[in-house]
Length: 361
Image (cartoon, rainbow, N blue to C red; front, side, top):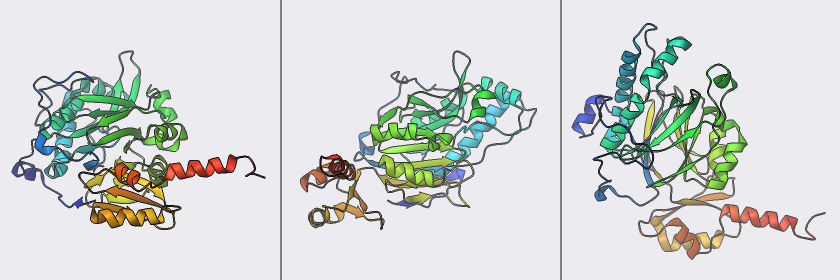
C-alpha cells in the first residue's frame, strides 16, 4: 500500500485539474437503477485491476452555526464546508471518499431548529456530494439523517457511484436508544452489500460496531471492504471486525483518527493530529491463510511469483495475508494453483474433526 502525503490547499485542486462542484444546484443524484441524464461511463483509460482502490477518509469536526441562522444559509455553509474538505483529497484522485456519520449535522441549534434545517436541506447536500462524485469519477459515501415518506427518520449512509447515481442506502441497524426516543430515528433492517467496480462494499454506522448481529451478517456476505462512518471510534472493535469479516475496513470518525485497516486488523494508513484526512492505495485482491499445512505451498507460491505476490505475516497470529500484485493473475487463481488452504476452510476442517465420531471425550 502506498500512502499519499498530499495535504493540498483548496487552490491546489484548481492546478491539479480537479473538478470540484461549486454549487448545490444542477444535476440531482439519480436514485438506484435510474441513470442520471447525460452522465458518461468511466473512461477506459482509468480502468484498474479489480481490487485496486484509492481510498480517502475524512474526519472533520461538525460545523457550528449561529443559532438564529436561516436554514437555507446553513445548507450553504455546510456545502461550503464540505467543498473545502473535499479539496484536500481530490488532488490525489481517490476512487472512494468516506465521511463521518451525520456529516451535515451542525452544532449550535436547538432540536427544533435542527429539524427545521433538515427539512429545508432535504437532498441538497447529498446532491452536492453526487455532483462531486460525477465530476471526479469517484464513489462517495454520504452519511446523514433522512426523513422518510411516512414521517419517520433513519440514520443512513448513501453510496453514490462514479456517475453521481445513488447505488443504494444502508440504514443504521443499531441506533442508540435516544436516537429513537428523542429523534424518531428507527433501526434499519437490512445489511446490503454493494458491488463497486473495485470490489464489494458493506456499510456500518457508529453504534453498529458493538453488535454481533450485523457483523455476523457481513461474515456471511463476504464484502471486500467495510465502510464505517461514525462519531465513535470503536477502538479494538475496528480490528475485530476487519479480521472476523476477512475484509479491509475504513473508518471516517469525526474529530478522531480516521484509519484504514487490512483484513488482519492492522492499521495501514491513518489521519494525524495535524491532518484530519488520509488517502491511501489499498489492494483488495487478497486472502487470509493459516500457516499450518501451507508452509511449503507458500514458499512455492513466492518462488514462482516473486514480487507479484505479497505474503504478509503480522506475527504471533498464525495467519498471513496473501495479496496478488499481478495484473493478470488474481489471488484466487494463485491460491488454486498451489492448493493453499484458506483460513476459513482450515477452521471449518478443524471443527469438523472435533465433532467427528470418536474425537471428543
